[in-house]
Amino acid sequence: AQSVTQPDARVTVSEGASLQLRCKYSYSATPYLFWYVQYPRQGLQLLLKYYSGDPVVQGVNSFEAEFSKSNSSFHLQKASVHWSDSAVYFCALSIPGGYKVVFGSGTRLLVSP
Amino acid sequence: GGIITQTPKFLIGQEGQKLTLKCQQNFNHDTMYWYRQDSGKGLRLIYYSITENDLQKGDLSEGYDASREKKSSFSLTVTSAQKNEMAVFLCASSNTGGAEQFFGPGTRLTVL
Image (tube, rainbow over all chains, first blue to last red; front, side, top):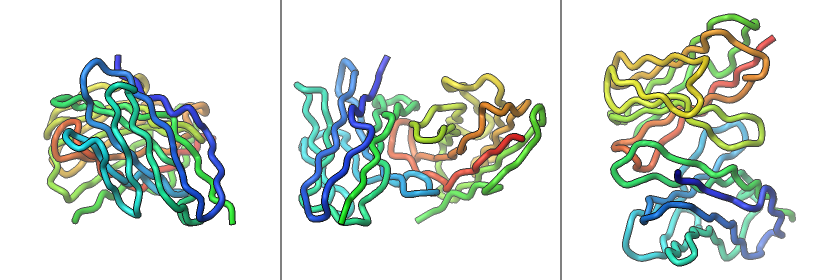
């Protein structure tokens, strides 16, 4: 069965610092991969998605992620974080042609001033 | 753009009560989903629907029923509310299976 692991439950970074949130997946072929963000008392919003092609994908608000087939990873990065980036970030996976989406457990990001 | 509306925003019920949550989308998406999110945790799939009148069980369907009578709406019923299922219920839709999902703001369920 497919799975998504986000090894860091909480990450704290200083405003202006760079950020990497880790995501590892388990699937025998290349899945569709997503990063979503959840602000307090809201639903999830898509940050970026990978279907195929260029392994580096750009998303909203200067986020980017890199797909690595050899490492089964899809880490999220940002060069300089802002306090408003504080939220919970979810990595997710789906199978091309399938319907179910598997979510990781989420990483809570706190940006300190 | 479109929007997903969930009603009610907050739902308070008694233990053993039957409760219904509603979701509407105007994206004209075929696929709709119901997830449960427990405090500080990830999302677990309860039901999904590929098209109107279709229902598929997710990993957490026991204790829930769902209904998709129209393409734009997807309802979830808690058949007998329990105190250990206090959570936020999120509705989502997508254009095709496995594609990016669009989420509603959630319904927060409290069971007394």
